[in-house]
Length: 179
Ligand code: HEM
Image 1 (cartoon, rainbow, N blue to C red):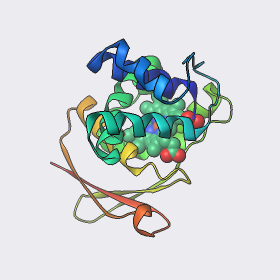
Image 2 (image 1 turned 120 degrees about the vertical axis):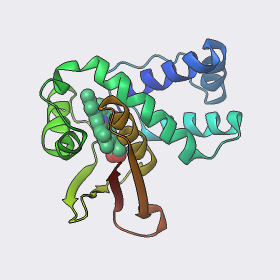
Image 3 (image 1 turned 45 degrees about the vertical axis):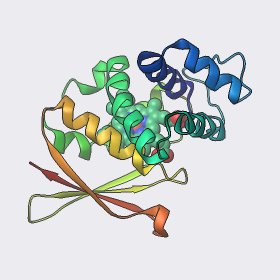
Image 4 (image 1 turned 180 degrees about the vertical axis):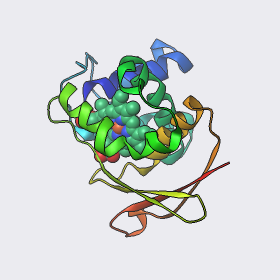
């Protein structure tokens, strides 16, 4: 996972609970220096460990913490890369551009990022399914990012997540209904 993701996790913890709590998390994880360079890659296990410590502190399940982080992450990533949003007009076309445009640009900005594979399918009903595949199985993060995008475009949505990699499927289907 890229350092930028660690940097934004730190910002979220410090914004909500202060720097001391972030330092407690670093101590509990045996990472005393806690400096993460945005473009450098760090072990996924390290961020998973941070999330686990945060979950224990807040007494919240990891899906809840990771989804909240995804929503926060969206705004912070967009603030760092405003140019990527310049020609984006609707939530639907934006979501359909994640795999083919946004993450392609991300691959030019960061060396060898670990990105998911996302495919989109339209339904006659007007709903849209985002099919998510990743060995990291971070579907709650994807849900949070989608919710962050929904706020950004001021387009309310409902998400149904009935097919999930955590329940044995090879992919997750996130069905999005535009309200
Ligand atoms: C709704 C919109 C988006 C969705 C659903 C999405 C989905 C994801 C997910 C789930 C991951 C975690 C890696 C994995 O699951 O394998 C990820 C990583 C990442 N995404 Fe996106 N993303 C979105 C928008 C964006 C935007 C707007 C940016 C940048 C401006 C961005 C930049 C990144 C970066 C830098 C990483 C980390 C790569 C790494 O650590 O190696 N994403 N994305």
